[in-house]
Amino acid sequence: MILSAHQPVYLPWLGLFHKIALADKFIFFDKVQYVPKDWINRNQVKSPQGPVMLTVPVLRKGYLSKTIADIEINNDLPWARKHWKTLLLSYGKTNFFKQYADFFEDLYNKQWHFLSDLNFYMLKWFLKTIGISTALEKAGDFNFEGAKSDLVLDMCLKRGADIYIFGALGRDYADVEKFIASGVKPFFQSYRHPIYKQLYGDFLPYMSVVDLLFNEGLNSLEIIMSGNITKDDILGNIEDSVQL
Image 1: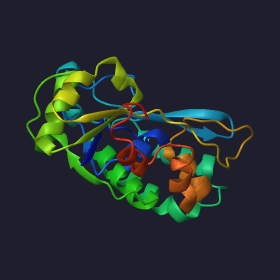
Image 2 (image 1 turned 135 degrees about the horizontal axis):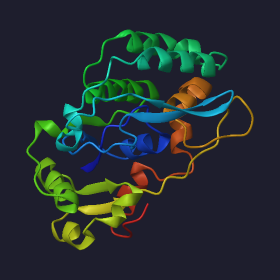
Image 3 (image 1 turned 45 degrees about the vertical axis):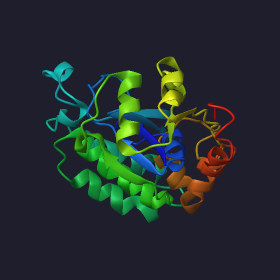
């Protein structure tokens, strides 16, 4: 079984969906410490004026001692109205905006209390809409132990993984020899960002997945995977290399 995991991300970029698509099972890892100024509560979209960062404000009191699952949204600020207005102004003229607009309008009209709940709700919709059938689980439903590489390995062993997909930064902390000795083959993703149709001038990579969806619609999964390794490639080269 191929396993992958990642911390919750707000409006994720394309590379996360490639990583999820490679796995049989994906762990939504919201039981680690919240890190400010990361992608947990923000991401960027392409507006007529260029990239715009959309940030979900959070209540910062005591956040250093909280896991991501316990981080509360600061709803005293009108963040939801701002985000919906930005999507409307940035993507209202794209080919597929009308197809997906109702979901986002409804999403931003809901009252969200915890950031993790918002991110998980969106992730499930994105995966279904894009056409990725990987099973989702939450880290909070299990008792994973350890730190960094040992934590990931413990997760793999408890969930029965034969292969684990790390992100590119996993090379900085993964104990590859320990994984292999435990019967888990580590792979490290190296995502090649595709080019697709965008509005407003030159192509800008590393936007939120909404940029791809609104511009390309049902072609999104094919574009996400284009030029990148597939699950079949991993299974066919399991004895060869730990790099994707």
